[in-house]
Image 1 (cartoon, rainbow over the protein chains, first blue to last red):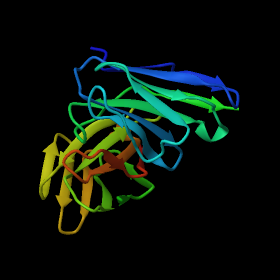
Image 2: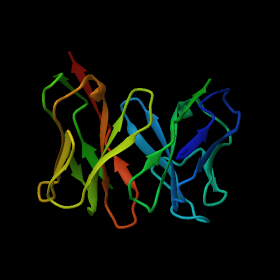
Image 3: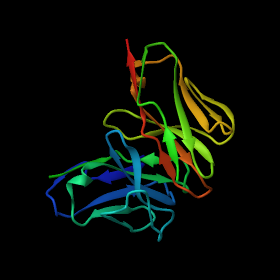
Length: 112
Length: 110
């Protein structure tokens, strides 16, 4: 009963380095999302995928790219990390866009 | 776009009742959701209101007034484990994503 699994849980990067955050869900959900959470800012949507084969920008997409690899997996890539991308990242999924979200446990990313 | 307003912090004592308010501005409206997040954890879904009125789930209830663009989460018989952040979120279209408020930190003291 894994739900939404995201890796890694913690990551430290130097400015300019790249990395990919992985996310997989086992609930056969169509829609998947990447959010970032900063103190006092709530959850802000970076990118989402309404269904396999589609991706769309959210509120704060600059500096990120995503890939919906298949129905289960949705990855988030930082091509050239910046200190402003220091945040906690959450992957989520839902049966349909706007429906009840199920979140992964989060990735704490620090960019030095 | 959408905007949501909720208090940044609320304090209460064990056994009490607390209400967390949320006002929103959206171009359209499909429903108001509430999520709970314990420190260091993932947000988890609590409730969803699409129509006016009160929805009850155990100790938690959620209320919506579409005409006032207002909702609240009511927590009864507070327990220490209810100390967490609570987020309201709106959906402004049939296939739109959720937009979250900045969250209300609830501190429950003995």
